[in-house]
Length: 433
Image 1: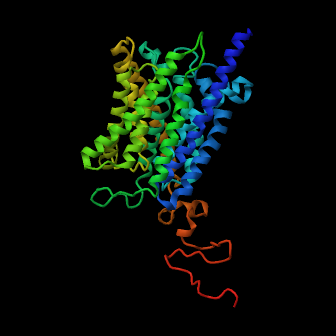
Image 2 (image 1 turned 135 degrees about the vertical axis):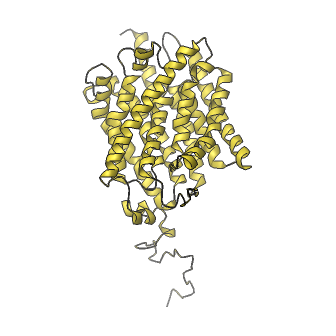
């Protein structure tokens, strides 16, 4: 290998490793975002699901999923365990995208899904569902399935539909089959708000995710390819940032219009929806297009969330469908309308639409089959008493905030008693007596 080629490859692969670490750090953002949006009695359960999503999913993708993706994409069985060197870096880069899609589901089924069911679904998503999606697109050895059908390639630069749209649709499907949390709906069908326990955690998670998204979008571009890719890198960085900002503003504006208040959680989730919206097309979108995509992705969030909640009666706890699903679909379909260069609008739109239908249809069907099997066998949902008690205690035997919980089996360093009933411990007794 020539010295220049070796240097270019070394730089690009070092870049890939750095951005892979950034994308992995998004799991901290998902953990905080979801933990903040659930009840305090379910925080440990949500954190455990996030930890196991990565741990189970990345191992399964290494052993099985990468092989399925290669096989279904026309390249024969090529699981990552048979690779070496740079091949393992390629696998890690693919794995952090796969696990992002997987962890989205946990936010939709929060508060009532059995841990074993969620882990089993994560296994199957990492082994089969996501690998089939990328086999249609990124992992195909020839023209992707969309191009075979339509004659035009499907455009998804960093996973707006392939990762986020898939995760949002999977989450909505699972939540629909599980049914709503206890107390979410009244007998007349009206919805009750079940607030999360920490707005601070939710916003912190949002900003961590936004930081990691630079790895997701900008990191998808190599640094060198027959020269420094300054134009592409700059455009992706710019469109990602503008869409993020406009997503927050779009959600805030619609929430304010509907209620007269600027809902903090809508602003946070709108920021993420703006990021999801641009993820499929940050390399081609014009300056004005970034404003349009981000603004529309944020604006649709309160509208779609309300539709899911009040019309579909689906309890999507962390709003994963309006944030990841509908925003991902929207951004993917807007590709030909906001592109900076000349694009054949009709053929490009048809290709994007076919891609959305293929990915969405496969994800919905596979997810529905899996969760219906769980439900029919009594393995999908925790019991009513366990849900009322909280999944932290019933599924894990812990309390995230023991000082404010039952207080049972709780000790403090000096051997004293932890009071959880709002009372005070008598401190008037003389310690020397």
